[in-house]
Image (cartoon, rainbow, N blue to C red; front, top):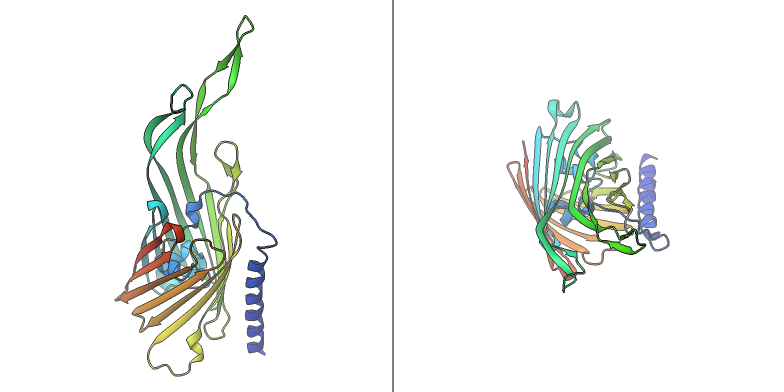
Length: 346
């Protein structure tokens, strides 16, 4: 009876994944959102597996996907650092650290950091008195970062919860806005007002992430759920927007659990996520992670509803608590994206 119930839950969950993604065509959402750097994945293992990480235990890096995914951490300390050479020569860097004192009896505490280097920009502004119609201004740069504090706890041997609060900042520099008003003098002559005002574009909202994971007890089958980038509405000058909110449902399992006798220590995790976004259509994400002797990992993934990047590939090498991960993602017109992650566990 128990096994029938588990199979029913798994079937219902998978159906809900595809129904959620399939509803995109009928209920296309293109709501406005900002701070899109929060949606960029820098972790190489996650990128190689098409970001399908909602139901996996992932150490400190889980803070970027589902905070509940660090609840079962077996180490005292886990550290990750990732470098992502994004499109248009934009560099994304992420780092995370997690501590599990007393063997995780009091839960797992973590911190995360995400920064973006956009490079330098040449500024211009409209000037009708110039022959070119504009004038050059100084070279300027943009900045963006997110720093978070998270906590996860294994409430039972099957159910885990986690959450994170992040301080998020994005500074797009100053803008010069013409007032487009006029002045009438004493003789009744209308004189155009060429005055301008400087408006800053620096915002610092708080973002909230939370999630759960549930081990079914049927082999290694795990369900996961997460909500990321929940925030209040913010605005720069006039247009209001929110952070790129995303709701994820995930399922994962080592499919080699069905093989009774393995010739050597190996695993093949299949992970499936359904992601519901505020700013674009839903996506199905499918990832595979094949490991041999817990030393070498080969990975692949596919994301649906993605114009430029569908498939992704990667590998990882682990030795004495240190792992190096690499991911390669073909990106259509933007050539490719490569990511590198170093992990250390003690």
